[in-house]
Length: 220
Image 1 (spheres, one colour):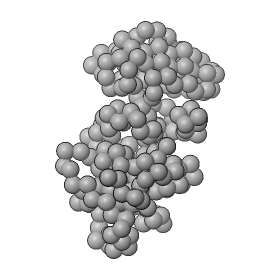
Image 2 (cartoon, rainbow, N blue to C red):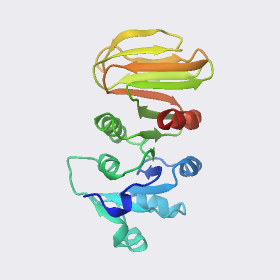
Image 3 (cartoon, rainbow, N blue to C red):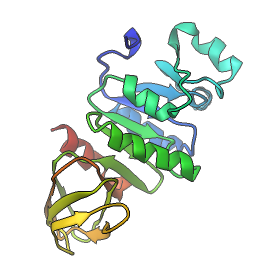
């Protein structure tokens, strides 16, 4: 059973233990005001002047001071060592949209594990927001409007067939896989982009400045 505090939230910002830019966190909280911290990110949240609704993880990183400040009713221990704190947090948060901050730009193994979790939980609408880029798993059909020459990268995390209109280099019935054909550094031709995938597993990477457009495209 999911903890009552995390049931049927509005949009949520999930804070991780990696690189956290205060400006980016504030931007995400305007879109997704319900703050949840993954383990030791609770200390980061408090240091930046924010009090998370909950802290999720195996709790090997959160300080005693943070525990005391937040109180036991906000602590959700998930001791499974076979899963990352991001994975477990994303699994228990019931929100129409989750923005993940502090999961990109730090340790590469941690970052890769987050991309793995995005693909394994395609029913969760989650955007990872970094200093320069954002990354998200797309549904079977994804539409967005972007200015001409905007970088639009496709990275498959599974074998799939993709079609994409509105990009400079054509993607037509393209058999893609992480060990074979990928689609990074494509560009928008200006206007609407339409992406179709025959199965789950496609990640899209865009410049962070287009976060509002991505949020609209994924939640409309």
